[in-house]
Image (cartoon, rainbow, N blue to C red; front, side, top):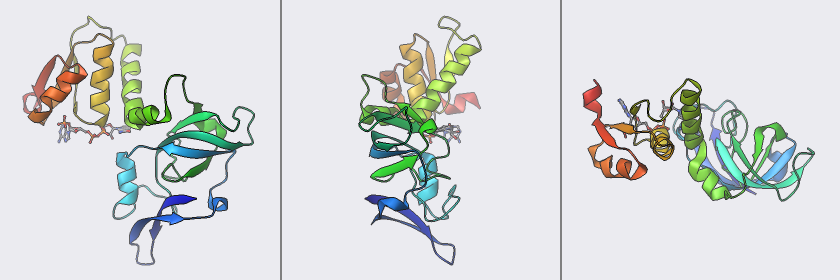
Length: 203
Ligand SMILES: NC(=O)c1ccc[n+]([C@@H]2O[C@H](COP(=O)([O-])OP(=O)(O)OC[C@H]3O[C@@H](n4cnc5c(N)ncnc54)[C@H](OP(=O)(O)O)[C@@H]3O)[C@@H](O)[C@H]2O)c1
């Protein structure tokens, strides 16, 4: 199997390369997943870039999330052929992650892929999209409802902000999108923002 391996030499310099490795090098876990898609998250950039960022142990396989198909499972909840998603649990930081053809992880960390969603679509939403959804759910838990007035989304053209803008608009909220990049105005309006607020106006 192939994997993106991040290594550190004796001088402390890190390097990343795609390598052919034996499957028995995968970490311990109950379920082995054939990875189909993984996103590129800020933390992945930290892991792959100079210095290794959030990597704990070397060699390391980054990839904070993935979607794919179960190959083998020692856990009764998952069987070969099941489509699954993983996000979080420090996978890609402490535990080897999704930048490999296979990942071995704990069954507790997996979520069955919802019907109607492909692995590609799940990873198009990715960890940034999940974060945006969790934020919207937390706001609604605190009483936010459409009709309460505009919702201000900061960093609106970023990964989390753009999905938050789209989710809120879809739910019927009036979204005022704050951006430091005026050229993203059409993109943000396309996502459903009703108003663009230049970042400088907030200062
Ligand atoms: N991505 C994840 O999975 C994830 C998970 C948990 C928490 N978070 C947190 O969520 C936040 C956003 O993450 P992200 O992945 O969406 O990052 P991102 O794609 O880099 O977006 C961040 C956005 O922040 C805005 N921004 C940049 N510099 C700024 C400044 N100096 N002042 C005000 N706004 C500025 C920019 O928005 P404009 O382009 O519109 O100007 C930028 O696109 C971060 O604090 C991150 O730690 C992210």
